[in-house]
Amino acid sequence: MLARRLIPCLDVAAGVVVKGVRFRDHRVVGDIVELARRYAEEGADELVFYDITASPERRRVDPEWIARVARELDIPFCVAGGIRSVADAEAVLAAGADKISVNSPALARPPLIDELAARFGSQCVVVGVDAEGDAGARDQWKVIANSGKPEAASDSGRDLLDWVREVADRGAGEIVLNSIRADGVRGGYAQAQLAAVRAATSLPLVASGGAGNPEHFADVFERSGVDAALAASVFHSGEIRIGDLKRYLAGRGIAVRR
Amino acid sequence: MKTRAVIVPSGGANYGSLVEACRRIGVDAPVSADPTRILDATHVILPGVGAASHAMRTLREQRLDRVLPLLRQPLLGICLGMQLLFERSEEGDRPTMRSAFERSTASLPRTQEARRPSPGTWPSGPAGMRESSMDARFRGHDDGTVRVEAPPVDAVACLGLLRGAVRRLPAAPSWPHMGWNTLHNRVEHPLLDGIGDRDWFYFVHGYAAPAGEDTLAVSDHGERFAAVVAHGNVFGAQFHPEKSAAAGRRLLANFFALT
Image (cartoon, chains in turn orange, red):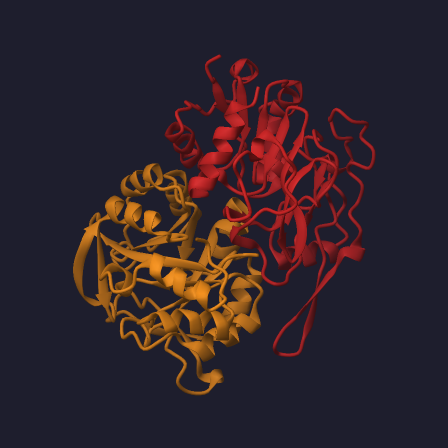
């Protein structure tokens, strides 16, 4: 049986890991390789490194730290942020990343997803989707572009579920749905939105934004049917240890790798 | 005898993780497309990511499709590399669901590769045979529509070192199969030494070979498929041992212990 995955997300800026609350007021939480190794040993199923400066500043992700992580890590990892072209993706994958994740550049030019899938295969093409949160009617759920930089963030004009279907049709291999209102406030994942996206596509779906306690993880697996749950601050602060969380989830009858 | 491993490049962008995983268990495994070095190695690994058609083109361009069948030492295909060991694959140039649909309706001619008999150690049999459109799959959407998903019309001829064809996994419960899964129906074999029910392996693939006579272990996602295979000197793992933490290290070490 396929295990539900737990994915710590490490926000990277200038070669170190930071985590913002509501994407502002970052604080450094540690060295990239040291944190990656710690999470792998604790039982993380996968890691996401989000280069929070590459995307808004239109810089390429630095392949040097990716290669360092690849040398250390024997679990898969994904790199997000700053990937705008096949050449960008190639540099990141060649440095040793298993997957690349695109978000705003795919909104700006959707055929990017087709190009990445054709060149590297769907299995390493993750599309990140930022949505406003699941208050309100589902026909008002919009996709937000450039959410990494609050002053540049804007409504993409795209309906969430339409965009998810388009992303799947264009050859994405996985979707990470991040609820912006839920992110950083630890009130639980955006269940209604995640369940609707789950029903709209058969692609692996990763829930992101809102994890505050172990029940939130159990709830999102049981009620929204997601494949994986991503979180940052609850893991980085040490409030939730991955090993403890897996024991708790297993006790609730959820399949996890232990 | 000291292990001299070689990793055969099959067109993927990244072999670094595999090189490092070998290094962690004390095996130096350089990447090389040089036939002399490959034939001289004690152990050969064929990795692969991306589409089967692209990988087979890469192997043919380097004439490695002629070299690999000559090996008598242990050869391990990983993920797509394992799929390439079979006679053919449904996975064409354009891997997306939409593309598959467009191809199936556009009456594209079959490729040369699809018609060419497979260069394997067995008679070519049905290699290159057109995959049936009976395999068209239906996927429901929550807006009430149902879309037909057909596989690409042209199967890609692969190395033919193992019998059988690689097929697309079902759309449900999710496609592609991505994440950690376990092995079942394990056959007693040195490659699986010390590997049990509670060992998890990292899979990421949308296509797989059905379980068959050469299957050492199966895994399940939507349907049962071959997760580990062996026939003579030819071995395959559908998961990524280099990304499967301790269990993956064990399998790689078992492979390098084979003679």
